[in-house]
Image (cartoon, rainbow, N blue to C red; front, side, top):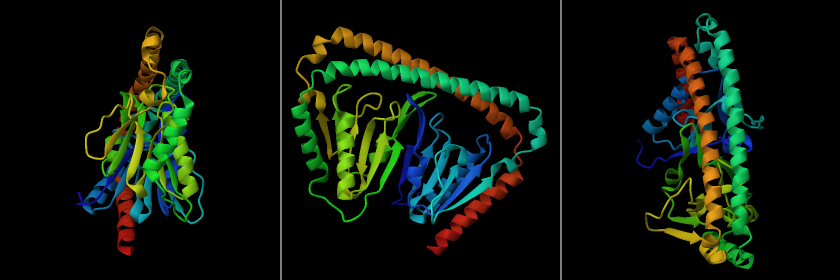
Length: 366
């Protein structure tokens, strides 16, 4: 790996309480060339993307790894910012529109499979896909149910918030993070997920995403104490001042925010409560506890019985959602197995070599 190269890991989509959410296109801002891998795949698209990543590592190129939200061991895309190149699974880029000045090239990935060999599995694959769709629908419903339970939880803290104190705290945090910084440009805002509800439970990439930052603020607090509201106000301030921001949405509730990174200011602030519980571990880390600063003392104790019961219901409902995602993953693995068995290795190598050749040519031209 190159000495100074950076590899970022994140999700551009997720299975949330609002259904499937996709921010892939937001992360292609400024990219001039996108290879879109069209058609079904076993793990071959992901393997090709990992080959692109190996190229970046061998040549010291920074890269962004976009992970699959169901199975994070699979990649949905690799973005090479300095070269303005990206390679992505077309199936993962659901809300992408053509952009003037960007060259989108579709690669027929279906050609790497022997269609004759797949004919025997055609009906079974169709049936499996129907079951996968049902699993996703059930998972999204359970996550939606869990969000309704979470809303019950929030009410106990919202009703005991001192909003004057929270307003003052928002102003203080804005000063801490951005001070008087202002840039004479339009800010670039990229929307992503730092974590996801995977088939194996929640997973986050906070440590990776914040590893090179000199200042990290850890937001503590209970549900409803204003962590997401604070982050949204910060993003609005960044837009007004021309400050670039990476905005990380909650992988459970897409309408909430979990983290904001300000690359130009070398700083970030994030929700460090479960399921992405992190603690300060280095110089420049600081805790900001909204419960301690803005909620009436004794609230936890006063409603401990009610909150305990809600917490149990919430966790149980989340587990049910994850169980359905696990079933979707098992079914998807069956389809991947059939496809992988039908791969024509020569066709696969041809596609991979052509993409790598184009990227190498672009590197020479820089």
